[in-house]
Image (cartoon, rainbow, N blue to C red):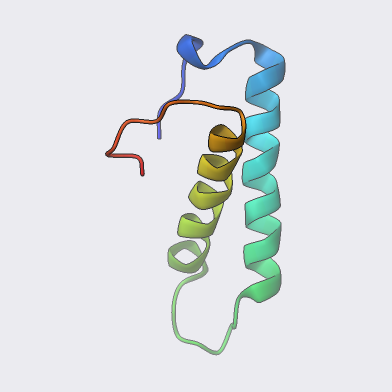
Length: 67
């Protein structure tokens, strides 16, 4: 997902980045190392989902392709 100037100032982007970190931390806690799936494949949807949830809470209008 690309984000640029239309999404706001640097502080807002830092909060968005932080929501991704929270998604990564939650994925790390939930990941089953014996599952046979890669951590990247497991974590990426959770990280992206956390960031999309943050954007929705901020009232951002997201394009359908992101949803």
